[in-house]
Image 1: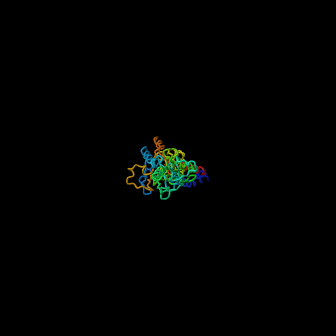
Image 2 (image 1 turned 30 degrees about the horizontal axis):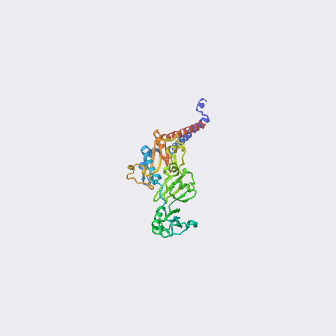
Image 3 (image 1 turned 90 degrees about the vertical axis):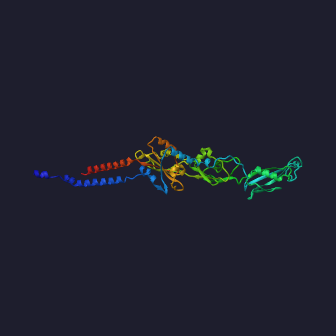
Length: 407
């Protein structure tokens, strides 16, 4: 009987013995799932190390430049941007003389000293007409300058006036009348200016042509005459075309800097554009998004602030990058020797900033974010290990719970 008791095992004990292999198999299965999950944890983009080696790659047949942001780099970028200002490209000359052009309407009046006989008496006052001491005048109808650039004056004939000032035309008339009229005097007045104007089009209240006067109208005068921009100033840019030169500036910068409110010249074309600028934030940031910015731009520190900064648990402080299609003028000429530019003459550039250094905060304030920039923050090397450990820990707790639950 004692022997039978020693060899006897209860039903629950036998059940646990039979379930042990199944429990081990379940544990192995969970561990394999965990390992495979950790091997494919995923990422928000390339690692910082991979980006730093991007200089060995090309994009659209152009070499990718990886440039660490420092004072010299920021100076080159700033200098290259200054030449795009209106004041630098077009200058700001003083008011010019108003000249007569084809299509303009002019008014000509001629006087003769008494006794006037050539042009006759046109005064309506008979007493003045009878007075031999009163100068007599002739009223000539207003005329439009013809396609040949001339107007017609009695006793003078066709007179070429295109491109001349009113004072020059007056002298020409007197020269032609000398010897024909008695001490002639002439006054020439530009009644309607059709040849010397500028054109304002685009996102304005009313597109129009604005005549230029001797006052010397400026860029903002033209915008005001067209009713102003239809969109907010911060999201509006102004394009100025003069001869074969075209340049664009944010309206906000023109308003803020009086030196950019340049004087206009005849035949200038002003196009007001609604161009909402934005940058894109990706990687280990608090909020990945496309963020709108003012036309005048913001700096990198402000851009990081608008997306909530870097993620404390994921971001690599040494891995803040700005991807940009850069103008060659902003780069060191030595780095462009033998390099092939791409996409309309631009160079693919990755600017690198190490935020673990206090001085980098100043660099972030001096670096301007431009339209279509991509700010990317790489994941810290230890962050993936932490995710792996976290996954393993979760599996271990799950397995423990399952083992406890098995009777």
